[in-house]
Length: 360
Image 1: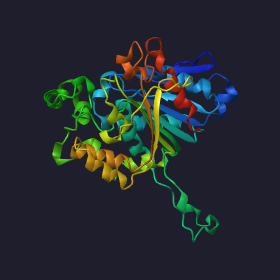
Image 2 (image 1 turned 135 degrees about the horizontal axis):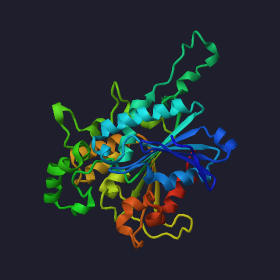
Image 3 (image 1 turned 30 degrees about the vertical axis):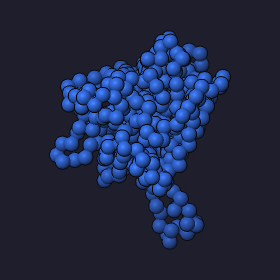
Image 4 (image 1 turned 45 degrees about the vertical axis):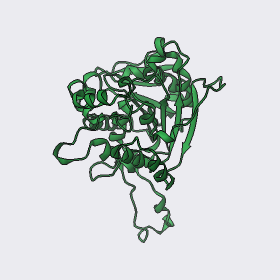
């Protein structure tokens, strides 16, 4: 790491590999910050994509958080596949934790494919609770039954995604720039690997090598080496920020983990603090009502329905965002994370909404 550079109360350090750490320039604040926030970029992106949000985190929560913008999956490395990227991210997180032993809590924030990479990584990082023998240690008074697992040995707090294709990108208008045309969507599924390599195959659910189910389908279950759902469940909150329109890369349904019949009817709201937040919904963990809804929605294919059902086994906060009145609304996929402060600053209220509701 290079020496930290302080500006506006924020200290940052860039690594030779492209990563970026951000913390408070006040020594007492930085010393008390015990919450690691890991920010993960999307396809062909870099740690710089989260610069604005990372700086805002530290400005607003200077004595609470230390932000690490991931460095292991940048540029063309994001084409190596969700599993390879997730494994690299898990190793990177453990390195950061080892370097800063004062951390007690951890949260993840991922944009686009970065959200899927983060989901894979936490599956690798999950550690089950240590159950002590109650007969040998009667002082526990049976409380061990309330113990929960950890992520890399840290308490899991917030798992947040921005415009992440949780249901993949195959068909059903999941990639809006294909205009929902079946012929284009089928063609894209056949050639996407030529452009986005393994990552493209994972997104379009065409990775059925060796008789295995597509990776995204495997990621709604727990396995010996990756406890995907146990890991997701230990976070105190899970949040999905989604563009309701003008995101031509990731559709509303896949980013908000909904069926067509579940998409809410939103309208312009007069909210001075968060002008681009148009709908918020707190969804409880899966119940029988979900089965009823799935029967009414004939547009879902079998795998997509399994993904919706599987991810709905945990609760989600769903925050719907609209930049329909913006002059640069066609860049909604980047505005939602303020990828470039000068070009995408209209998304600043969405970042503020995330931090204002962040559990520390």
